[in-house]
Image (tube, rainbow, N blue to C red; front, side, top):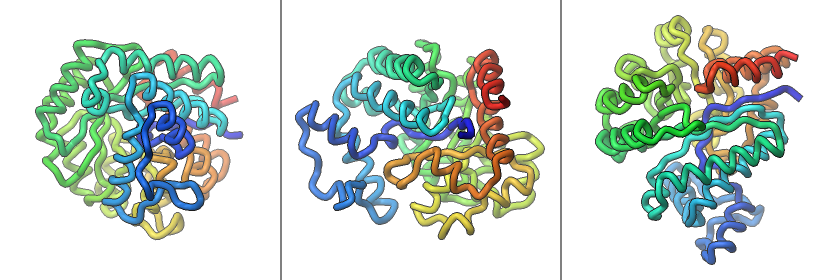
Length: 319
């Protein structure tokens, strides 16, 4: 089995239907009618209904422990498919809305990471993310909290949410603060919007990675610039296809990006919603063993882990 590493997976988006049912039962919650299909998978049919299903699944989260169990469960599943390292996007917005203290939330995530390492040998890390459509002030508040209360497993800062809301420059103060305090930075761009969103991100933010970024393939000059700078794309083919951005894997630009010299990684994004896993992304990428090992190596090198952790992980991949 080829060792794997993942840089782009949303914590709440990793909740499998079986875990959603388990958490709902534990917390005395009645799950919404129509959330599951006859096959047991989540039901949605377009981007808006996907967001609705995502939010409904998140209603099962009530306590700090729930977030830790979600993280542990995802890491355990990824490890069974050969993952040695995973960074998860974790937003403090949802626990805050539930009245869960920031420190309690982090302690639960830490426990999940430690338990997964003890049982499966996998390393997990946290990227704290702001939500773009909630605005720059909320983003800056999150960064200030992250900097003021550092945690050994928080290694980066990122931004998800609606690409059409605001522009990257609006969030420059938040990203600069994170960068200047030693956190790696990544931002979602070039998923729904075109290459111009990636240009704006690499121009206005101190990012070394782009979440998705697949629309970069529409602009040869941008691909050349990403390759020159070594900016790594967190590519999520299964997500892109499920959301209708591309018809199938044959039409997905993964191979064009690689051929143009753009550093890429493979990721699952919100795996149970898109009927994928990290293992499936590797298996269905249409790449041979050496190419897949290179992608795993790229992911570890581009990760926000400390140098000692990177060296240890790279030794394992190169065996």
